[in-house]
Length: 285
Picture 1: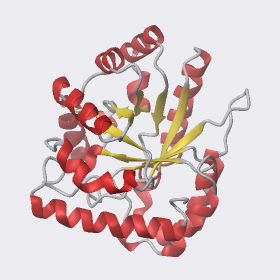
Picture 2 (picture 1 turned 135 degrees about the vertical axis):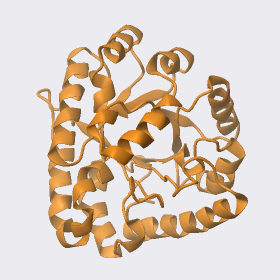
Picture 3 (picture 1 turned 60 degrees about the vertical axis):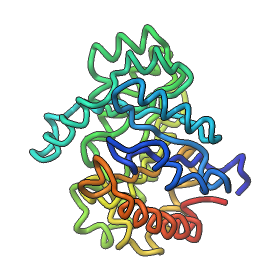
Picture 4 (picture 1 turned 30 degrees about the horizontal axis):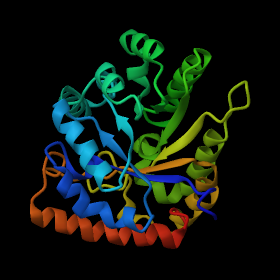
C-alpha cells in the first residue's frame, strides 16, 4: 500500500497522563515519527491552556503535528459508577470547545456524541465553523453507533465538516469476555458500520480509535489478542479507514503521571505492539 493510500496513523497523548510533559511523549514516540510509522498526534486538551500551547509548540518543533484535540466527552451520567467518577474528574481538567477553536483554529476537534448534543457545543461550532470535527461513539454497542450517526448527520446538514470516529473498545465494552470467540462476527459488524454512508453517499465513519493501553477499563485486551484476530481486523477494516488513532491509557497511576521506570516499561511494550501491528497489517507500510 502506498503512503497516499494508507490511513494516517496518530497516537494519543493519553500515554503520558494528565500530568505528563512533552519530553516524556518524545521519549516514548519520537522514533516512530522520525521513521514515518506515525503521522500525527491526538492531544488530550488538558488545562491549563498555557501548558497545552507549550505541548503543541514543542511537538511541532520536533516535526510532530498535533492533528486533533480530544475535548470533553459529555455523557458522564450514561456510564457506570466508576466510569462516571473517572470521566467527571477528567472532563473537569479539559478545555472546552470554545477555547480550543478560538486558540487553535488549525487543529481538528474530537469529542463523544453526548458533547455534540449540547446546545452550547452546537452554538459554538455553528458560529466558529471549525476545520473539522470528529464524533465518537460513546456508549457500547449499536446504541453508541446510532447516537454518533445522528450527530454526524445533524452537523453535516449544517455544512460542518464532520466525520465519525469509531472507537473499537467502546463498541465491544460489554462483550470483552467473549471477544475472542465472537471476533469474526464483531469485525463483520464493524465493517458494516464503517461502510455506512449518508444520503449524499459520503462515508459516515472515516476514523478508528484503536485503544491499546494497559488500563483495561478503556482499552482492548491487546496483549491477549492473537495475531489472527489483528490480521482479520487489518484485512476487513483498515482499508476503509482514513485515520487510525492509537489511544494508550495507562493503568493507575499512569492515567495521571508516570515514573521513569513506568515510562521505560511502557516504551518497551509500545515497541512490541508497533512491531506486531506492522506484522499483522494494522499498520500499513
